Length: 258
Image (cartoon, rainbow, N blue to C red):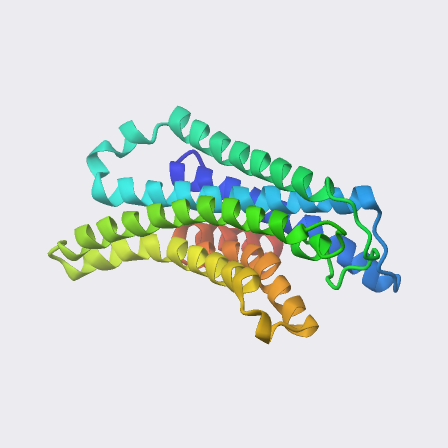
């Protein structure tokens, strides 16, 4: 767990856990008690923590892409470029970026007066649905939020794409097929997680209004807020022999043979 990859995976797991705990427990409580009530303060807290963990996760995925780039393209400098202090600073920067972005988005959203009721057609407090309740020109705020979020997301996306272009160029030059397979196997889990995260998020927020419906919006919200955090550990663990061996030893300890 002291290697850079597992250190970043630990941070990613914490952000995934926080993201799910922000929305799912309250939704389950409301479903079991047949209610849809949430306080104004609780809604603001849910928005803040959800954006905080979501933005942190994307920042961590970007940092992990750099880890993959260095390990494959500059293997001899791996320990120099990704020492323990450097990894700690990169992880702290990812969490700090998520915190500042969430604080800005939450303050910007809840500074608006709400006058179109207090019912959200969603299973958790989500900014686009809150903005629809505003009596001011909320679309200007929404446009600003989209521009800021899209700019930051696009910058991370360009960095990820550029890194993987360099990675694939190096991997394809490896003479042995076994070496290529080993190099690809270290990148595919990260690439799968990034693709799942981006595809569900982009489609949920950038889908055409003509195909929007309450049931589709609910399904997409579940896809991007619950499915990626739940699948991330599975995607990474399936490619890790040491983790599978440790799980096997743990299960053997739970169920000893007689």
